[in-house]
Image 1: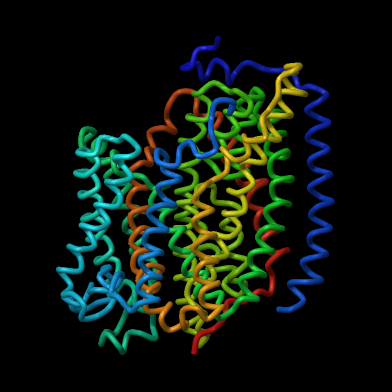
Image 2 (image 1 turned 180 degrees about the horizontal axis):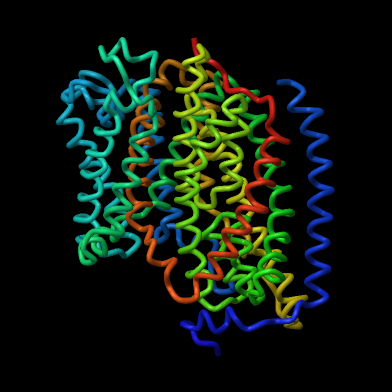
Length: 51
Length: 484
């Protein structure tokens, strides 16, 4: 069990970057960009066009 | 996790739920007045711009009570309401009562000072007050309360500031104010239903895109550039991308981080949010007053505490309207603030889902705990309950008005003191309290330096530019309704 008051020590410990982190980050960014494009088109077609 | 919790746990013991109860209690008082004409809300004290200090405050319904009586009745009823909450939340009610009283009366003083016409009147109002000059600082009372709070929280004797913190509850006060804001939106939506709905959906879209982009980018910067461990990086990414303190805590729970992690990050969130609150409204007014709804929505995406966001939105609303009033444009009050709140509320609503997603990712992929299940009820427990109060208040007022069950004039009579005088006073309490609980010494604490650098960097290079872009993309061209 790690110490609750352990802050700087654990901050400075380097943890290796895992391949799964790459997959999750890249997946989320791709999903974000695609969502952004789809929603932006929809909002422009149905909402902002009215203003 | 949530295995031993029931869906109604916390309804009488958490700030979140007590914001709902208090906010809805006042909203219902407003509806009672609206439906029956009974004076159940007109007693609430209302502060106004002044050159003669005897005219600085009065009852919301003029003539119902004298100014002093209105102020005292307001103090008594607000005190009773919040002390009831404090009692149920098992706080030390005696200490809370004394500290609350100090904060209440100090806030009254800050409000009166900030409403002085030489400070607050716009150029168009000078004639009305018989003055030659004014600073035209419409939201100055908020800033005065904030700085006075910061003074109390950082420079007064430790014993005093520790004691006053017993009742300095910015998140609670702002949540009450936001529930009451729901009544305002309901009232406004009756007049401009289409615009309110557009704002709602645009805010939702901006939030979904922001979630999916902010979090992974913030996480990468924390991990790769600042070499933070996964638990620090995940909690910090959530705090800065989603909704600050509650996101850090929810993420900490979801990934089973040590308690110290969200606590340390929360202190950073508060300090940075206050800095944004001071800087952003002025900047946005200077450069984006021609896109007021974009400016408001950008605050919702970039300021990471409910209190600071709503507070910054309120200042922005005042500053932008005061600026364009000089050009002869009179935008209806509250829409810029509503856009700031709307995006933030969507962000708050999704936090339960995001915490659930993170819990699943951590269990299944990062820490690989085979066989462990994440209950779906976790979404409910993470859901910010004050949001329910906001929507109930909004749709109740709008529904009763649109169905003509209560005439619009009646609704205005009953609801105005709630959405105006009461809400603004709780905003003021929030500002004073934010200042009191913000401890700049926290930044100097050992171990916070690198976290602060990571937070500041992510805020500057990811959250602010992307947040501003998303706000523009989903809201540009939207203008608040004008008033005659």
